Length: 283
Length: 288
Image 1: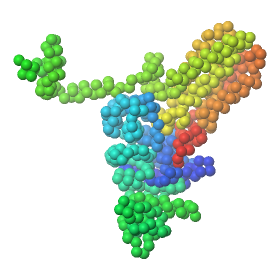
Image 2: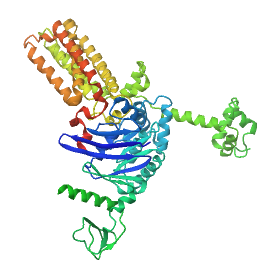
Image 3: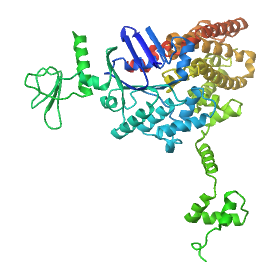
Image 4: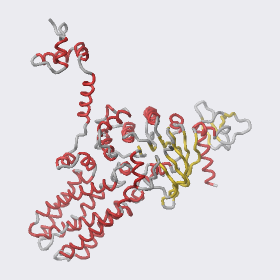
């Protein structure tokens, strides 16, 4: 069974169109959701997490329709959601906070054992008794992730969990996400193309409330095939160009005839898509 | 013979492992085990691994079991289930700072009522007391004041139930504190309890308006509405108001009942974040 099936989801906030005709499907494994600020990623995640309803479109999550109260409850019982800013009660310890979320999730039997299990899963065994306010940003994100994993959810939604983490913490978090994605569906919103290339089996690119790409990460890189080249000087007419560590310029766009083409990365494909969409939007 | 040469005999270790060792031999063995890694290792061979694991698990559970704070402990002592007490422990209006502020406000209004002895009703208390639960509820629920609000909304526990739990707790504490303040003014008679019906009416009205305007705006509207109504009906010199007569109190009670019905009708709107006023939802403002 497909975990998430969305058809034509749309949502407006006043005069602002946040989502327009968004359709996609999610299955087991980690799917990355890439897009610039204001692309509609968080809105889409909040709809999938049943925090807000869409104005229009069809949505089935884990076989249930979240528009009705019964369907919403069915989804919530099998959902793990880590919002962009989870918001912690600072006076709680890590254990107490996860325990609080476990109560909200109506976990009755063996609640404390379940709290211990998820804290162990995210490597917080030695920090269970520490106050949230005393934990580092990376540790807090782990506490949030532990709360997300309560009751072994079938669908996990993570909204930019690697923001603000240092490189080592980000690496460890990616490890965790890859592990969580084994045997369940994970939707990971991120700004980091490295997150996508390292842990995601599929990727969705959003911009201006629409889906611009859906497929495998290698296919996203292929979007820029034949349109990435290096040069000694900044190339005129490139959509994007930057100087690399060896002093050469990395250019994306329509290459000149004598260009030295290189294999594109996911980031190149992403930038091609976003710039093309922005140019189309401006026109 | 030095402690280094001497080790606990196998039979004694076995007896110690099953809890059969008796003092003073028990004390001697324990003292030796603390200093001798070799005997500790030998002891492990005599202990059932499952029993050790169970022991560690019990110890773990003891060590990181949540330690209830004063409010949570009090609620449990009053007979509330531990998980309900934990949900209420996150209510800002049950924190010491808020309860102190309520106590301070009541002390001032009570003192003001005593100073205005010419009045036949304690108008400062009757005007301010209904606003206290209103403010308490406004700061106890919603995206602006509850850091984990988004997580609470998408949890299986119905948000409306959480709201009612917290409101009941806020109303109970403010009612108890205001009741104590009322006891300090026996000279006014039953009219001193005139704050009860408007407290209920204003709190329920603001909750019923919350899905449309958000918790803070709804509370402000109800609060200013109350002050305007009071200002329009109160007699300047005596402090009397039709609101604190029997018909006025009946009208306020009817208003509370109507608000309760309206709240029940809109309860489903609390199930998602959309209806609690997008202006009050920081996540929709910050990013899409």
